[in-house]
Image 1: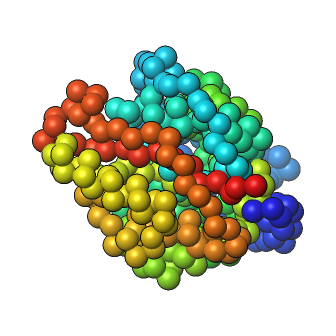
Image 2 (image 1 turned 90 degrees about the vertical axis):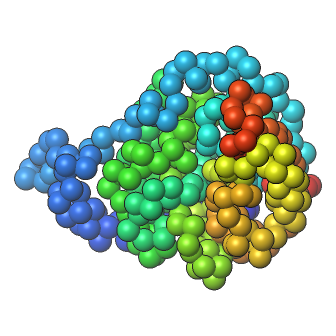
Length: 312
């Protein structure tokens, strides 16, 4: 991940005109879903994307409590490249701790690629993205539209008008924490279907290398085991932690909710690492479970957070 983002900018410039026409037509047909024409200059409509509120995902009270209870951060050795963090805000303190650790380890991050599950199967293709900013208590999280344009115009992702992301907590729940620690960073929001096959997932990871540079960090937004008893979930988490360290492709492409809810994104990440010829090491940050937050011990969700880094 040592190359400049200039390759992506060049590609974006080459397709900008075609993309702009497509975006205008697409947005005009979908004004009821969040894109509106708000001004007109010399007979050209100017489109403004309405922000997505994070309040349906995490309340101000929850985020404040998370920062108050988050553990202090330790620096991850080496150069942090990618990480995995929960989107279940019952454990919001783990999300806060993840971003605190990331800030201590890699403070120069300018762009985040956030890969979420398409929880509600709303995307019109296996990979979805959008261009609407997120409204957080600390200000707007802006979308890196140059990067999203590159992915859309290359056929790697489908542009959605943002309506599906108004419900997608896999992206939205992370935004206030990201903004808090990286106020100037932009985001490339991605939602992926869990039914993507291995070849398509790996290919998308390789395509992501076009937009990933030294100032970019990839986040796998994922909770771990679901709906199990506490004992069964914690037992499964031992296996999952081992596989996160090994980056076991076969395990993650077949993984179900009893281990992880976004295994496909791990295969995408492996494709990216292969494209960049990187063999990173995994550093565990946190491990917990919903029953430790007062949840039912017979019906749990578990959480593993960590970072993959390249050792110097």
